[in-house]
Image (cartoon, rainbow, N blue to C red):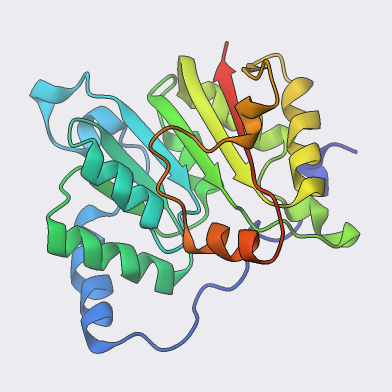
Length: 229
């Protein structure tokens, strides 16, 4: 049975944690609607900058608290970013940074990314990040893992030739799972030629709170890079 048929339930867990503070709630109510991605609208139109239609677009799926996405958007003002995160509390944290720092090059999606990707035009993304996704460690949960043959097919359609897919995790079983699926895909090529290529963080990597916790607890992250062929 294919992974398309096997998948049951969302790849993400809870949608909301503790109650939002008044300021966070205001951002979710007012800022979020103004920068939310409209399904069916491609990146070139999404940022309402016709003169900048050729600007690169990077997508981060599951940005957690938004530390990495905010860092990239801050460091690369000439690149447009789309961040997907269903967890309301994580979305609120990123919205606060966007508001405070006036990061006009960020748009967000607060629902299931598998509902959004099929509405994008072909070959519209220059890079995709999947960083420390939920590993769903129990055997019966693995069908809910984000990286699947189905997801890779979706990503291959919207990524430009030469675009990078970057995946980071500290869970060995999930790293092996991802490698198995990407290595059997004809749409992607693993760029690693030596161990340091997956042991060392990406250039300009800011780290995340989750990663710091994993390292403190003795787990070793891997940083995989694949290219859309």
